[in-house]
Length: 224
Image 1 (cartoon, rainbow, N blue to C red):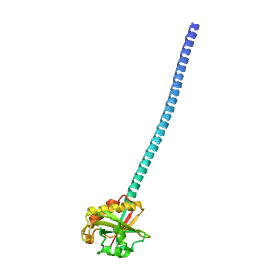
Image 2: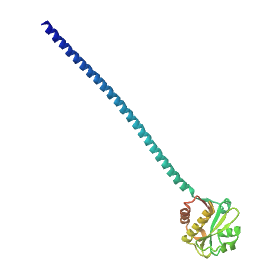
Image 3: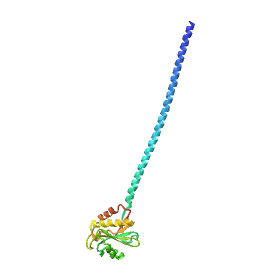
Image 4: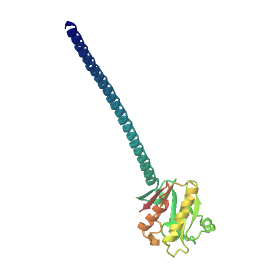
């Protein structure tokens, strides 16, 4: 009897010990699982943070490039706008800086008997030299002085005729070509084609802007 009781008690003790070991193992296993889960969460948070920073940097770089590109575009647009200038001032045309080349309109016969053409004729002369250039309506005759060029836009055949917008445009384009070939950057002129020639300044000024808008030239228009 006693031996049987001791044997049963021993078995119960071993059973309790096994349960304790299993429970302890489970506890240890759960503890290890919790630790792994916590490490994975930390790694996931770290990766998410790094990805967020990378995304922010990429976005920032994109915005910077976009802003830079917009700035370049704005600079190009501004340069184009500021490259050509059409200025209108009150004053004597011949008081302009000597570095400014002069412009006015004449007829093919180089008569220059009225208006501001008379002043050009007195100041610069060389009428025969102008005639020898043989320019017809739509062309431009040119005199060279020490400081500048003087442009004679030939817009009609005879002095008593009236120019057309077409002949004036053609003469302006011929002058533009000469200016580009000889690095002329500044011109001074009256309201060409208007006055005695009766063209409308609003239309002429728009024509001048359209023709010279792609240059870096400055054209100053003088009125009294």
